[in-house]
Length: 110
Length: 345
Figure (cartoon, each protein chain N blue to C red):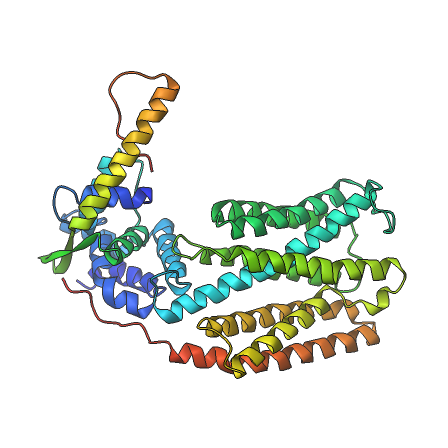
């Protein structure tokens, strides 16, 4: 799973979001390190949708335009949990090899 | 409020880079997300934004990247786009194969310069010659990296090689070493068409692209080098170089043979399910080899014999390509057109 896909799935973990909501949430989650461009975002959404990891939730009108919301599927939730475990385990190994102690950080590097 | 449409229209114009089926599914959502990122809710500020702002270069590049990935489709792409993706990937591998074979030839000459081989003339030395050799070897690594599906390494190294070639060629031209008539045209056109072009076409090797089949391509490398390049070098070293076709000629004849062999397989019904993709790939191979032959003709402007030989090679290539072109067209038409239905909300 790519870093971008991981962040997009994470952005949808606590509820459905529309496209710009995902972009903003990913920027927050990554502390500004990942700034998704629209072409990249929809490349990821298209792929995740084809893989059955996300699906459309609803559409809402906003300023005369329709915002489409996306949500995680059950498969998406499972894939995200699996990836989080993998990254977390990798981060633990890295910290151990570096001889670092203290609170563990999530392995969300992209 | 006609100005409201300006930024939106500019972005929709950028989105025209995307295939129609994809726009039908995602365009409205992309536009809404794009405008959400620009508009603040302040009518005056938004009005100015709509009238004067344009999609940023990064936004345009991200859409262009997405378009390249969609048109040169990978696994899961609509059949037609997947076929084009595979054909372009094969064409890039074909050009890299040729570079790798010539790189191996340079290795032989390098070995000769170290007195490891005794029957070839030793090459001249100097930094620029060494640079040319180094770029020749680097193409071998690029080819192998593509086969290993290490696309990032392949792209980065290939970009370095092209940059080195540009510097090297500029040096040759500025110092008056390109003395043959039309040599600057031939060298620069080759650099653009066969070095830079394939590097740009490496966009087809994206994360959805199926990994190349290594064995046939490695066999092609060994076969071309051992069965064609080595005998050609031996023939040249024995003073019969006039009988050896030049590189463009060898490419034309090789692609012609491949076209002929593939056409026989198609006609006899022995070609498998990927025959259409290979027909399309061979048409692209023929186009590349044909361009190589045509641009190289300029070198023989004052050599009637080589000019005639080159034109014959070109005619053989065209005749061979005509054998496979109908199957390429037929197989494309047979693939279902992508659906343009809108994604349900």
